[in-house]
Length: 310
Ligand SMILES: *[C@@H]1O[C@H](CO)[C@@H](O)[C@H](O)[C@H]1NC(C)=O
Ligand SMILES: *[C@@H]1O[C@H](CO)[C@@H](O)[C@H](O)[C@H]1NC(C)=O
Ligand SMILES: *[C@@H]1O[C@H](CO)[C@@H](O)[C@H](O)[C@H]1NC(C)=O
Image (cartoon, rainbow, N blue to C red):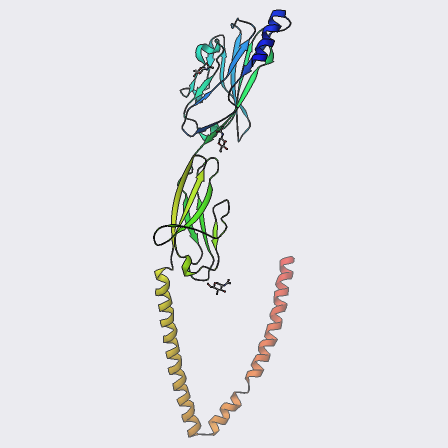
């Protein structure tokens, strides 16, 4: 800075060239959502005159890379685009004093990007005419959503997910289990950067409350889920067992009756029994028929394929 000044003075004394030097003490600036920001910029010009002073602030959005002019002043006339009116504060005395800093209030994530101040003070055209500042708007993570996927039953795979809709920089996620005393127990499982925790072959020891923490540089937010063998599971199991027992009982009764009838028939007459033996022969024949029937069905599927191809 001092060197540049000396150089500028030297050059102005010798009259070789007119020079302007634009500088900013900022390079990277962080601001939280809703916050205000002073974008600092100043210039030193060899010419004392500022009647031809032109000050510009440009903004290149991080995500779009299209350039937008957010401030322009020339001959004491300021131009501020409508979307910045009311949230942009102008440089003191239009920058004529060398201070061309602007302020922006109510910063939003869309305001993240590169801000450049550019100064021309004709006839000072040479030198360093601009300075840039990288701005990152930080947003704390929004309350995350915790969810359970899969069967919460012993031996199954259960997946826990956690996600914050908002947050800049993108939040990272951690899971802990809360024990009976609500003490935080670490989980011996990997959590993906997107907040997914897989509990393979779950056992009763792993049931309980799980807490996810979503964190970034400016904030922290949590959510919880409870892993417990659902009460309905027991009811359903009971119903299924009851139904099965009922079926078994009916089957037993039917078998018993059939057996008794058979016994009576065998005991009463022998010829009908022989007939029954004879009638028990056909099954191989029917199975042969069914086999014959099954092969044309293959052909018919081929036919369908052909039709489909045609
Ligand atoms: C801005 O925030 C990021 C975190 O996103 C941090 O790494 C960086 O050091 C911060 N920079 C300044 C200048 O505070
Ligand atoms: C420039 O002006 C702003 C007010 O707009 C002030 O806050 C800042 O301190 C000034 N910078 C210098 C270097 O004087
Ligand atoms: C699941 O865990 C039980 C003990 O909790 C173990 O006996 C079983 O072998 C495990 N199964 C698999 C597939 O890891």
